[in-house]
Image (cartoon, rainbow, N blue to C red; front, side):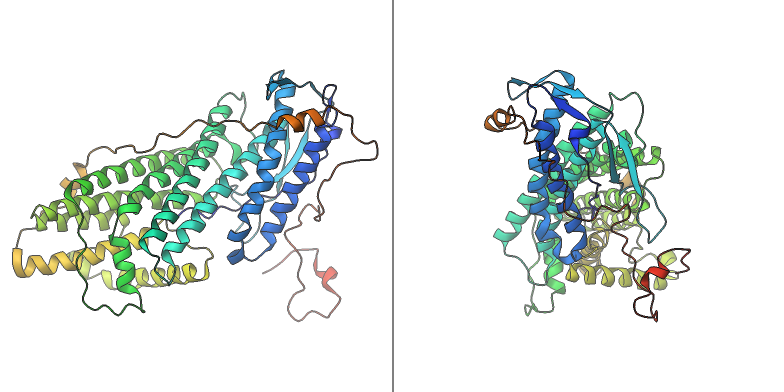
Length: 474
């Protein structure tokens, strides 16, 4: 369940005021037009209902992919490098100033963070590429949402959705890792937390952790079995137990541990950063807990398949401890578990409603879903052990301490900067039309365009402007 990124918005900018080119005079104007399209796409995306935003992601991605090559062309011209085999000369007229709304900066609850004024083309490049990485993660999120709908997907649909989501995660990781490495060459950190080296490094680790964990989801039959068991439309009252090969169970556990290690790295990086939004920090911690709990569950499956049901139950108890939930059968926890169990069930139902609406779901990084799988196996194995096996259940702490290191699955490809097509570069050799100022966007460019003022309840019609200033007590 990927993190629900909020796409930033930006103000209008005309590159012709800041850059000039003797070899390609139309480059600044063309870059201005491409940026105007991106600006409008981001603003329109933000203003549509949350349940409809996923279908608009392709439009935002197309605008970003069209604009980014122009940024790299300007960057290549300033640094004296070639672009698509052609030399481009770009002169800095004055220092570039742009405004972006930082979405990871901690702010007052219920209020959007203000726009941050940034200088240099590097900041513009970082925010634009970061936005593209967020779009890839949100597209992965949209693909995975199909797995939790009321209508259970077929095995083919499940494989297609997971494969597409994995590809999007790796694309996002490639961009974040490139920006992290590039930010390491800076002499000073930027004023925006979103493009600081700590946040970029954390996002690179986070997306790799999600890409690693999804490789397990592809072949993990238990979440689908639990979802089918809870499906009200399911009429199969006789359910055959799910089988999983012993060797793959141990392999899956190692992959989950690798995901947990990446999440732990991201957590430590965010801890070093200042003024980072708490929702991201909490999500990374939940993802680390979920990954370790999944590893415990697979080690338990591996033990149960070997006939060690007691050890398997101990692993499941360890999984519940990683998740922060109470385990069945613990006498010392039964006394205080009634309220915690009720609270957990309430959060699960609230998460189910979010999944149904398609808004705000997945902020727990799959923690409650994994808790349901652990409870499902716990009830089954405890019943079998009480009636058939009657094995002693060892303590879970030594088992947790003996877990091995993780095993990596992905080898991400390095980021390749997109370049302009040859015919586009050739056309920009011609000077621009003197009357053409470039397209900077059609949307309103006020400093707080998203915070539209609404008239208070009970206000006299036509007096909304009188309530736009002063302090708000709500």
